[in-house]
Amino acid sequence: MPDLLLKVSGVSVTIPTGQGTVHAVDDATFSINKHEIFSLIGESGSGKSILGQAIMRLLPPNAVFSGKVELDGTEISALSEKEMQKVRGKTVASIAQNPYLAMNPGIRVGTQIAEPMQAHLGMSKEDAKARTFRALKYFDIIPPEVREREYLFQYSGGMLQRAMVAMGTAADPELIIADEPTKGIDVLKKRNIAAIFQKVASNGCAFLLITHDVGFARAMSDRIAVNYCGQIIEIAGKDAFFKGPLHPYSKALLDAVPERGMHPIPGPSPSMIEVPEGCRFHPRCPHKTDRCLKNPPVVDINGRCVRCWMYA
Amino acid sequence: MLKAENLHYVYTSGLIKTVKKTAVCGVDLEVCSGETVAIVGESGCGKSTLAKMLVQQLAPVSGEVFFDGTKLAGMSWKNLRKFMGKIQLIPQNPDDVVDPRWTVERSVAEPLVICGVFSKEKISANVDALFAEVGLSAEHKTRYPHELSGGELQRVVIARALALEPELLVCDEATSMLDVSVQAFIVTMLKEIQKRRGLSLVFITHDLEAAKAVSDRVLVMYAGEIVEEGKDVFDRPLHPYTRALLDAARYMSLEVVVPEEVGELPNGFSGCSYYRLCREKTDACKKPQKLWDVSGKLVRCWKSK
Image (cartoon, rainbow over all chains, first blue to last red; front, side):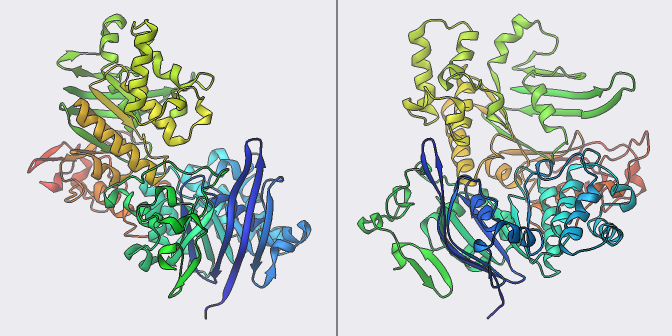
């Protein structure tokens, strides 16, 4: 039995809006082991990012959270905000999609990277600075003594991405949550990000990758979870998943990638406010029967989880 | 049908200390009727500038664009307008095209009004047909852009581009911000429209697999130049840059390549544009490279012959 790091059980998030209640996450249950790269794939608007925010406790203030998140044995979903601040950035860190929104344009990059070390590891300013130098060098941001004193606008896009990883890993977190790290960037930059993540993972850090990029998830992860309309509908090991996905939606999603002929999924994406009754994929599913109108059970097949009546 | 010869574009910025940056450098391009041509390359290699020159949004610094044998550059605005409808651009970000304060119906009807269709019945019949063609229902017509999802809005933009019955669509990263299933839907739809109307497509993307799935012919661009062109570019890549792109797309060699570290090319360097990052470079690469014809493919690398 590998060491358990993160355990998410029965997490649901609803967000009341003017048009009605958005069921962003429904009954999410999964776990991430130490040193594991776990990918959460799914389409935009399926609630993946909200799930990531729920784990970090960074949800919008009007969101309603229920369920339990355990990190390294402590139930972080029950911590007070003050205690959570000690966990955030230290044990679990997040790497945002857009460096321009995640970093402060008015503060030197070196200072921002040193900040989690001073806050969480109790380092003195000098120690933190020396360690920032090493981190910058490690992520090929050279020469570190010059780059440390520069601001965001002096960095190139690729360098910023690496600086953000340096900031996320500054306090040696055990888990990194990366939200859409490859959205809208070209293949060469994508490969660079994959390489940096592998480098960080080889030091023993676990990853939760939230992405809609199936190819990137395939190259990186150990296990894959598929999210559809707020629910996790399948969890499987990478090789088993790409060899034979079980859930009809997983199959349809894989058939839509260019390598497999770009077959579109029939029907429109469901609304997150008035979610379909029973199985949420049934209006678009080619195998639907009458029982699909009832909530499908989560079936465990040799360590793979699938939420579908076909396997019940 | 569309022919571009020796296109150049240079961006200048700054008032006192002008900085010149060459975006497109001597591109020749030919698109036949009914053909799909894909242009691939990393961001910043001049793909979008090339697209803008093809649809006459930017005037090339030098070089010519011909459409059905007629030279477009230097034509008067009045004459050019007849051709503008025949070549349409579908941009990456649909929000750039539609007015957020207009209903999408009005946005789709706008090109018709501009080109002198004024009867209300005619416009509404046309718009209905266009909405049906891209698979949107009548209830979508009265909505505003923010009320539509990314895929639906992209379909509105395609409907708008089809309004003037174009013969050529230039899709500039039209699907790269969309999810895989939506991307598959849009691409399948574009191919169907192409078959029905006999359109030509220029498909600009950085997604190699999508380019491979869509196109009849592929052009690989690097630093404003075409470095490789042909039908089976991805099965038999000859230029080192194409190979590097393919390796990156398959996550073959996981190492960080830092362009800043390699250093700038010396001033006035006239050799191979890929010299800086090429792994197979020799002294002969410092000479200017021309496009070699290698068994039906064009490759800008002397080693390939």
